[in-house]
Length: 276
Length: 317
Image (cartoon, rainbow over all chains, first blue to last red; front, side):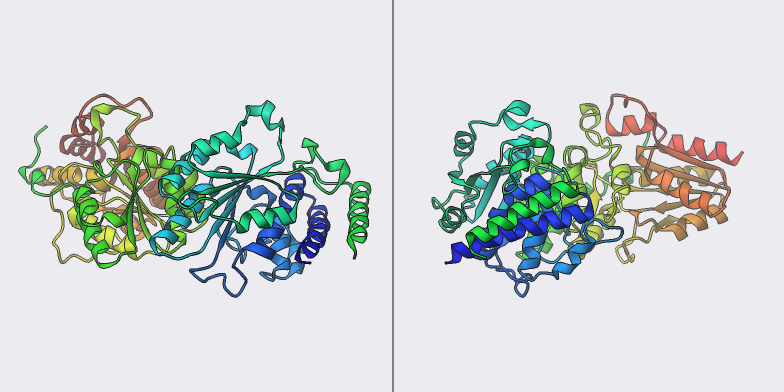
């Protein structure tokens, strides 16, 4: 039952994030659509955090290292009650606190991100502090696959395994596309599983749009005691809108009126199919 | 170059930093030193021995050092991130800007062996840019202590600060410039010696050079005011304005590039207030730094008692 609700939420989130990107006339459409199922599962099934407990030292943390997909994060946080959804009408407008990348000015956001290769080191610090204080919170961080070219990530991976941070889970939004094109053409990443394993992480691969599988894998952490957890979530950039799927141009493309209507129509049809 | 014998009577500011940090950390287990294979150069071996659970070793990875420090601070730790000034403010600059300053994580960025402290090791190890880049980044206090007293007070003040702070140390033993009962306030400069013919506004390990120049000038009947501008940001604008209004010439002195450091900060204050006074920025020119020890290099560029004496006289002509 919970998974049926999650499936519906994912579609609703896609409709909303497209609405706000369209209104703002800016945004990272493709990456938000590829990662929104992951955020949905984290905030609606996994994370022990709420607007009421956001300042609790024992809360679970989520850090969005791929900060450009902030639209997905905003719609999920507003749905969870961290701020009124109507606030998002100001997204990226003059003087709006809702910037095009995450900032701590918005309740629910742990760290300012946007420049790539930063979220994992920050998450290592938070996870390490949890270990020092014997708090049992967990830290989840989401990285883009193109982001893995930033060397700082690999420094942080070494630190995480050195300090046995099994309370830390990094999720790779493996949609295989970055702004220039295919990740393997830009600067080949594979074999990621073996690379992460050799850096001392316990690695699982999952369908990044299967909310049941995502929930199960996140709830199974730590995969191995004493090792940080890596989840390679295979995703489709632009997922849910057929003409946007697997097209690098939708990295930060904004639909025109006709495209927007088409996208919303497809998503609403999908909503009806799943029972709303 | 002859130096006053008093120069060797103090300890290295770096050593005082380490001692002070240990004292603070012994009273509060949330105080951490985070290092990038820099516990030796940071004089932190006694800290590591006394409080092994309060030192976090990151290895030679400055970007990671600063990012992890931000995460630790976010979770409530009082974090001193210790790394050579050159690497902390170049390799890790984006982490300093975004993870610490923009995100307002109250990390204490400790730049060790700054300026030309590494002497003949050359420009890879010198930090003559750090004050300029840190001044241009919003939301970070910048402190450059001149002596052991200023160091101890700055470290204690930093531990209590709720926002980012950058503190810059050299590694040479420094003389005592102040009485221990002096009041140290972040953002308020300290008067090292009074005078109103010329004012030296100096910071860090350049302050003693200005103080020795003032002694030499006094023997020639010229009184020199020496101000230790330990806080470069926020700048003590009142002290700068008073120097410009009360003295016949103002000379800024820093172990830093002439571009973007203390001198340009003071010039900006004076010029925008309409105060016109003979003015000279003594620092490092826009060129590859000459090879030598710290004092040899500083002396070559005029950051010495002799050089500063000459500069003062030329401005007062």
